Length: 245
Image (cartoon, rainbow, N blue to C red; front, side, top):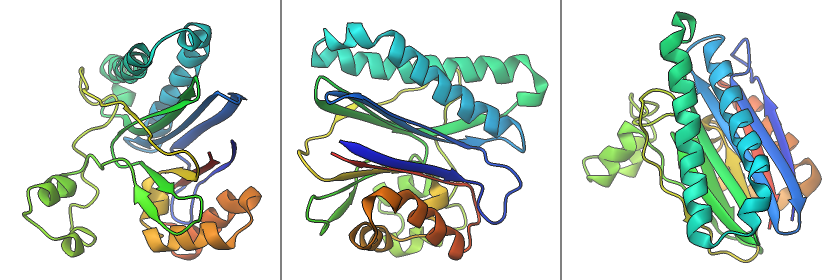
């Protein structure tokens, strides 16, 4: 396992409200997180930073225990980790008016005992690309109003890409007191994972992402993704982690 990661303010924003964390602890243990803050100039940045730091700290404190746990208990840990993080951000925004309305998306990948667990809230995504770099698959499902319309077959995929409410979220960390989240295990042996904020996916299609993985040296993939997104407009903060599994 190896990774490359980067976050960038983009071409249009004044500050970066995205945050990330990426670390490989050993061959069977790793943690990767991307968070995209919501709620204004400063509070969005606070929300994403609190989320990433809280997830990292809790993961590391419980690491020895997790290594002795079974699959069910590890799933429960990751589920509760997001719920605890949600509660922390929610409490902050309720207690301080300057943080009112702040929140963050999250996409998390944790490797424990050799198995890869993942979860997401909002529209930050996890993609899988096969080891031959021929197929790209979006693993997570966007928590957006438009995606709900798609699921109900009220609009077509072609309409979703240009829908005026494309970026309206149905879920985010810190907005509501309680948050339901699903934790899954990735059933893939080899290939590549891409964790990213919508600052990347709004600027690059899935085909663009797959082509980039095919063309660029792995060690500079995150830089190439950032550069391409900025050349295509860079309308938002851009964050990407590429993991070879």
